Length: 168
Image (cartoon, rainbow, N blue to C red; front, top):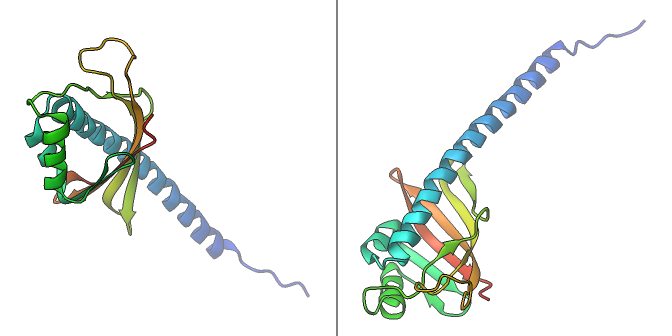
């Protein structure tokens, strides 16, 4: 006598599971693009206004109080105030920055961070160059990689940690 196993309940569960994965992947993909777009704007504010124009109020508004900055040549700034003071002293002594920042086209990437399905942050990576502000050539450029840890608190993105490395 042959025994038949009814796989129908198992098949229904499997199809439900696969559908859930597909829906979550589509949602995360759409979320990833909107997160990328929002953080690309924040990156632009941080550098085009904060860094290039020495708007330290803008910089301060984009970083957490517990901010930490790790630089492979310049060392560590272990607080938001230390970082602002370093910028004021080294980059903006006259209120103007002699260096400008250029994001390497196509290098910006964003990786959302979730805690049990709830978005809490993102890792943003990329490459940038720093030509002299009055230079229109690539002479005297330096280049580096960066990694920003953005945290989402009360609906607002703030940079919590920065790694600035591979300066050349």
